[in-house]
Length: 189
Length: 189
Image (cartoon, rainbow over all chains, first blue to last red):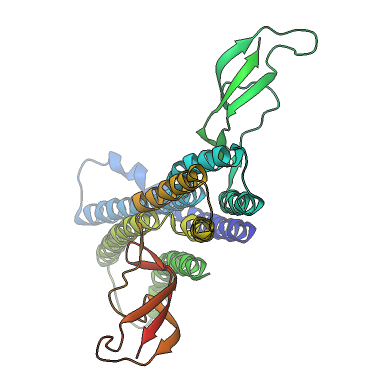
C-alpha cells in the first residue's frame, strides 16, 4: 500500500518536473515572439508579413496543443489514482451483508466450539481482506450524521449526554474516507 | 504481485510516453537552433524563406503534438477500461480463503440445521457478490494448465481418459478471463 503511494508520489514529482520544463519552454517562445505583435498596425501586408503571421499562428496552435496535452496527462493521472483508491468499493459494499450474516450466525446459542472457531476464522479473514483494501468500521465515538443513521432516539441524561450512541443495530463501514454504508444506531438526544 | 507488476508496467509506459513528448520538445528546440550553425555554408536565405521555414516548422510541430494528444487520450481510455474491468481483483483474491474456510466449516459433521443454513447464507451471499463483480469458478471440464495445477496424477484408463480431472482439492477462480488462482486437482494421465 505504502509502496503504491510512494510510486504515485514519484510519478507526481516527475510530472511536476516535466510540467515545469514545458512551462519554461513555452515562456521562452512567448517572450521571443512578443515584439512582432506591434507590427500589425501597418496597412499593407507583404508576403513576408503573411509568412510571419502564418508562423505565429502555427506556433500558437502548437503551444496550445502542447498545453492541452499536459492537461490531459495530468487529469488522466489524477483519475487513475482515484480509480485505484476506490477500486474495491463495489465488491466491498456487496460483501457487507455476508459479514452481517456471520455476526448473526455467531450470535446463535449452543454453537459447538468447532463451529464457532470456523465461523470466527471466516469472519476474521473477511475483515482482514477488507482492511487490507482500506475498508474499516465507522467510528462510534459520538453521533455524526455523515456516518451514522439514527433509527431511534432516547432522552439524554447526566450519564448519557446528547449525541452519545446508545446502541449499534448494524455496523457502518467506510472505504478510506468514503462512506460505504452508515451505521444504524440508537442515539441519546 | 503480478498485478503490481502490471501497474508498474502501465506507469512505465505512461512515463515513457511523457518522456517521448519531452524529448520531442527538446529536439524541436535544438532543431530550431541548429539552422543558425549551418546557415554559414548556404549563401543567401531571404527573410521570407526563413519565415516560411519557420511557419512550416511550427505547422509540423503542431500536427505532431495534435497526433500525440490523440494517442494519449486513446491510451488513457484503454487504461481506464482495464482498471475498471479488473478493479475487484485484489479484494476478490483476498476473499477466496474465506470461501475455503466456509466450505470446510460446512463439511464438519453434526451441524445443526440452523448453523448449516446460516453458513450457507454467508456462502451464497459471498459467491453472489463475487459473481456480480465478474468472479467465477474455473471450468473443470478437462485439465488445462492455464487454469489448473495438478498436485497428483493417476494412470488413465478406459473410463477415465488422460487429462480428465479425478478430484478437485481446492477450487480455482478467475476474474473475467484473468486467473485469480488455479484449481488444485488430481488428474488422470
